Amino acid sequence: MANLASNFIGIKSPNPFWLASAPPTDKKYNVERAFEAGWGGVVWKTLGSEGPPIVNVSGPRYGAIWGADRRLLGLNNIELITDRPLEVNLREIKEVKRKWKDRAMVISLMVPCEEEYWKAILKQIEDTEADGVELNFGCPHGMAERGMGSAVGQVPEYIEMVTRWVKQYSRMPCIVKLTPNVTSILPPAMAANRGGADAVSLINTIKSITNVDLDAFSPFPMIDGKGSHGGYCGPAVKPIALNMVAEIARNEETRGLPISGIGGVTTWRDAAEFLALGAGNVQVCTAAMTYGFKIVQEMISGLSQYLDEKDMALSDLVGRAVPNFVEWQNLNLNYVTKAVINQDDCIKCGRCYAACEDTSHQAIAMSEDRVFTVKDDECVACNLCVNVCPVDNCITMKRLPLGALDERTGRRVGEHADWTTHPNNPSATAAE
Image (cartoon, rainbow, N blue to C red; front, side, top):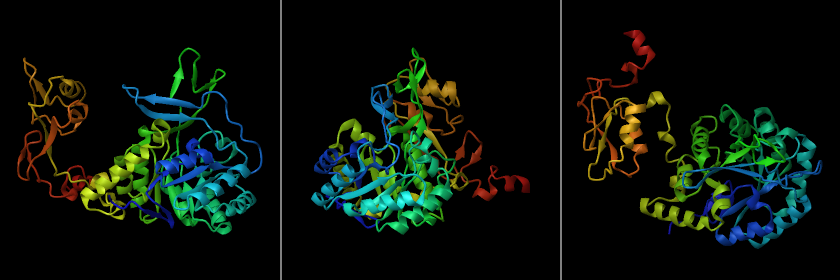
């Protein structure tokens, strides 16, 4: 099997799969079970400093979004940071790290945005022998109302300031956990970089309401007839997370800043996609909460087999797709395809026809005996038919060669050699 040993900002682990800071990493019992199952590391659930006590709700803490087959697509949680005593957490962290020396142990932290608070808690955790700290600037509920979490993560100046404090008062590598609840992920990432962060992790949860109880007329989860926004996570947030990770990986000011990818990682493929877009490792939460800790074994075997088949090292995968992530105007507008329906695989359900006829470009014809064919003179290659077809690879996209006539536009493929001569370019239009 491929060697999955990971060295992320000097923190070594037997594989790149870490558990994210969340309920699964709240105490020694859980973390040891995770390590026994094969996880390469954990980020211990967020610790706070002395001050107003953390009191979690005792009613429902999770809302959910399911697919048609009851598969869990997303969780909304309103749980706060750990409500266990700081000294208990610190003692258990030290015990676990001494027993599992080969696993990564990172401590998530969140305290008020004042230098003395950070100085004090960093001094307290130095003795745990943990490998690093993660600054929780992402939590969108509960703690944000106290001026912490995403309230800090949405202000680049605060991110830079606190990161500098942490680097000043701690020997540990520092990971800054970013909130997705911003217009652009780049200013917070740049601020963390300026502050001296060793890495960033993202995304934290998305501020959200998953559903509404239509009898009680309250958002859910509902506590005594009232609900609140929470943090959304799970497979449904993966596309948002991938984009934000890739934005940081390709930006000139943040390129080279190590990234720990978080957001909907459920399979080895998900992890590989994060790695290909620039993440150095991945953190997982919802998948473990849905399927249990042993899901990491499928991730390990799947990623190992993939790397073996590609004859790649783990380090070769990291960032492999970043050069191919470009702005829209850099896409090849001379690349022209048309949909093709494989009649042998077609089950004649008509979903492609209904979708295209009603909502797209009327490019699929249906005969009296329900044979579906593509009208090349109408097909814009939008790919909608491929996505709604229930049979994998029944509909594919065939590329037209250079010089071929595109029946829809009446132009030869390759007629516009580059962006400078394309009608979509305002400069080219103005010149004409």
